[in-house]
Image (cartoon, rainbow, N blue to C red; front, side):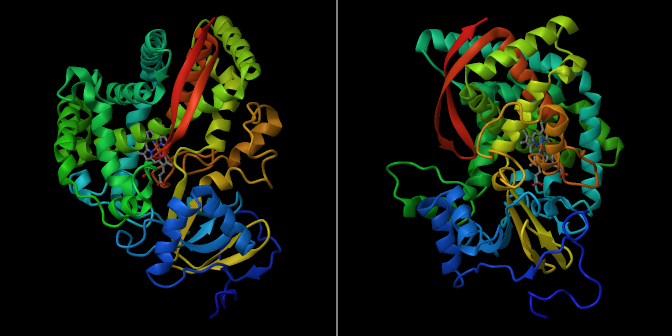
Length: 490
Ligand code: HEM
């Protein structure tokens, strides 16, 4: 059967619950080029000739479609198969959240899967499809751990942010600037460690190196997905070293072991609990390190600089409105509490807007479990079982057919009834913002905590300061390099 024809018997399911729109069924445009060379060309376009956004924009134009075929890096020899079907609009993207239609086994990093040596020989929860029994066991366990620590969130955040801002102030007074990334990374690691281990990492074997240990371990797993953009290294050389063969585990073995030991000795309560659920102690600990280091710290490493970049760059008028809302509510509610945060509609909207305009984890993959029809705004396309579906999220969450002025940071975009209706198109958590993570889906287990951390960060910032200025550097790996230039005290 030709891929432009619907399947013969019953029609395949569509990509969401809405009634199938009356759209023409088309053949998916685009091609993969010659074997090996096509994947190599796409890799060079993506990293060097065009860059990430232009890579996708130019193919949307060429194919006159937001759904098309392309290769995704890294390709040879790291990916066994780099062919994907890209879904780049707000309507088709959510097919990736539908566990009846896509398989999420080993697709966390895309078309390649780093060695399990990085995770103690186990496949961590984030690499498991919900149909695998271990996914249910671990996802439930993580959700229950987080729920049990609900009362700790705000005090830990307040304490950590007080330290962060005081260090930033010190650095500004001595060096006239503060490197936000390094300070935020240290804070992020301490928050996560404290949350699960009830102590400061510097009181353990990990010492003050926690964030560096995790970053090195992350880099060795994720290097094939990034360009370092180093001025004096020719592209072909970087490409050869980063994107051709996977990095081995042994250079980061001692860093990982240090982290593992730190968690193993400090999280004994959690590990005891895991054993009562029938989970092996070492498997529980490797999973805990992965959740804390990869999922949580990895996410925070990108999220916090991005959030501060957009908020700072939005300018003094937004800062004044935030100051006003935050100080009024904190005063009337008597502090930073859950009900107080819930009342801050502008703060909430600003956080969602940052997550919309620059989602910290921009790629999602899923392998078609069944033949299906997926539609964009303009056409329907048949995807066959076994094909890899790929979403580049920043294009879906900046879809101009859903969001007005999609490329602009509009702080109050999600305020009010009409604004809140748009939350179903905010996808940062690997799910819609109006949905919740469960053992049956692949939505971020830390979704509510992430939103909370971002809100508290803004509240603590604008309780202390009236405004701030920053210098935005180049994209580093998955995030932005950010320097704080000034903080104006309240
Ligand atoms: C701070 C920013 C964070 C971002 C941007 C983020 C984003 C994400 C995304 C996009 C996924 C889905 C990955 C995929 O399958 O494609 C995910 C999964 C996950 N996240 Fe987060 N996350 C963050 C923080 C956290 C935190 C704080 C925790 C827990 C403390 C957490 C725990 C998890 C877990 C356990 C999964 C795997 C879920 C599953 O396998 O079903 N994340 N996260």
